[in-house]
Amino acid sequence: MKCVDDFRLRLGSHELIPIVQGGMGVDISTSALAIEVARLGGIGHISDAMVHTVTDRRFHTRYVKDRLKQYKFNVGNLDKSVAQFDLGLLAEATRLHIGSTMEAKRGPGLIFVNCMEKLTMNSPRETLRVRLRAAMDAGIDGITLAAGLHLGSFALIQDHPRFHDVQLGIIVSSLRALQLFLKKNARSGRLPDYIVVEGPLAGGHLGFGADWAQFDLITILTEIRDWLRTEKLDIPLIPAGGIFTGGDAVEFLEMGAAAVQVATRFTVTKECGLPDDVKQVYFQATEEQVEVNNTSPTGYPMRMLKSSPSLGSCVRPNCEAFGYLLDASGHCQYAEAWEREKAKLAEGHKPKIQDKTCLCTHMRNFDCWTCGHYTWRLKETSVLESDGRYKLLDVEHVFSDYQHSVGNRIKLPILD
Ligand SMILES: Cc1cc2nc3c(=O)[nH]c(=O)nc-3n(C[C@H](O)[C@H](O)[C@H](O)COP(=O)(O)O)c2cc1C
Image (cartoon, rainbow, N blue to C red):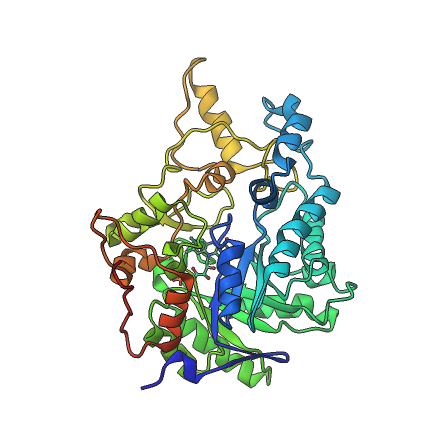
């Protein structure tokens, strides 16, 4: 029987263990996590979501405080278009986050950044241009274009000196999305170096509608693989979503996948950014507690635990400090829901908001417990300690289990 270690991922001149740890914003996939995956010979992803908050935490910068100070006068105003991001500071924060990660990188693997298009930041095109270019300036090995169709993203960077040297990939959930991406980016004269095919069991936002349960990863991957073959396009395919064991991974590698992208199993590692108590909640989750809902103001369905403190919470929108989901005209669906409910109530009452969530505030505080479908199986991957808590895992343990395990066996950590 084969294991993942019998396969290799070839990307440009690199030969890698075919395990890609997927990006998990906001700083759930920390630099420490990605650095460890790269040290072990795979590809680790950091994320550039809410980069100012992340750098403030890591480097004691004051980007968020200063932004709030600048736009405090607008807090009571529903129109947030005035609260623009300073592009110079955005580039600076991105370079700090990514540059420091790349400096600390060791070993044969690579570090990529997950760049979500839906992070529209009150000026979608300009902020995305700055994010992508600053990541390239900071020496990132690769960029995974996520949460969006990215129809114009290559054009934003095609004159960058590293355009042909950085590994560039796209996440798609259908052949149609891939075809559109290739068509619209064709003028840049460059194909993606890899394609992540994300199925409906993934964590975070889903690239499906309310009918997500009718789709499955194997069918989508097969369709894309066969189409690429007909078009004579040799682009590595990386399936993602619900690949829980080494055996699951081998199944995809034998189908012709170049690697697998996994994330959920890393949420209960010491290096993961979630607070330790939240990691215990993930361990203890049952299948019934995992749901897909429409509370994200991005408009995409999102998978999370039903017990997420973000659900039904009524925090005042904090767009002057954060504002990552403001659209091109300064609106966010959560801020609108807040105004709608506030108008219904007598002064002094807190509005109740069930349909949308303030994703910036709650992702920042690790209160939106987004997760993959198989979170309820995490308890199979560890052991209970004498205090009744599950033992947190090392990234190395999880990575090595994916790499070497045979069949659907999962190697447990040793109890201290
Ligand atoms: C907690 C969590 C947060 C995630 N956040 C993001 C994100 O910010 N951007 C993104 O493109 N994908 C995100 N994902 C999706 C993963 O990168 C990955 O593709 C997917 O979850 C793999 O499936 P698995 O979790 O079943 O292994 C997230 C997944 C999890 C579990």
